[in-house]
Amino acid sequence: MTRPLPQGDKANESGKVVVVIPALNEEQSIGVVLDEVKEALQSYPLGMVVVDGQNGSTDRTAYIASSRGAHVIRQPGMGYGDALQSGFQYACDELGAQIIVMMDADATYRGEDLAKMVNQIVMMDADLVIGNRFADLKKGSMTMINRIGNRILSLLAKKCLSVEVSDTQCGLRVLRADSWRRLDIRETGMAFAIEMIAQAEKAGCRILEVPIGYYPRIGVSKLSPFRDGFRILVTILRLSRR
Image 1: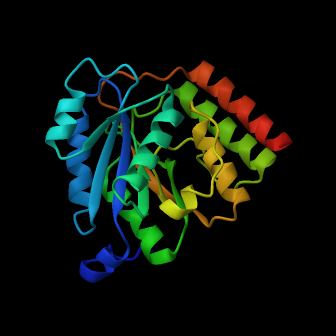
Image 2 (image 1 turned 180 degrees about the horizontal axis):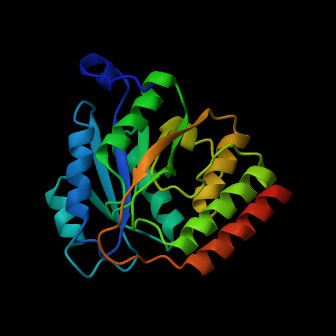
């Protein structure tokens, strides 16, 4: 049973929470996401970082994010993993993050699950908390191809990398900043997610997985299931050999 979200002194003692969100042309959803973040984590010292794509959003994503109080930074390289690494670095170096949250800009996650996961870091002394979307997939949130592909990749990761995580591609995660600094993550694309877990396991981090809801996205998906799935598979095999 999840303990209540810390309030007052307990929340302040836990350190600053910084939420990092990669975003490219997400003007329809970014305001909704940032509003939910602020509401869910109002008890904590909070920072928000939106990492705009290398070439920059061509819509109002950056403007909306800035107007909601987020720090908007330009991604130096390319890829999902590169955006997150850049955001994590900024969160630690510029904002003094002690707890880092990574989440998507498309409103597929909800504030109550975010709060629950931060609570696990603070109260349960975990190093990395990962959401399990399969616990509560909402209708229309994931195509059948993506559902099957995610299941297969998660099973392969369990077998090849000995990681006890049921949803290795979930994009909602919370981790301690000092734990992130111990991870040697090289992947810059979607395979960043599985390498984070493998590196955390190797570093002896305490990993927890919690059930969350997963909702239909706002806007058009930019994922390529077959291309991204193949790259993740190659990464799993490479990490297992290493």
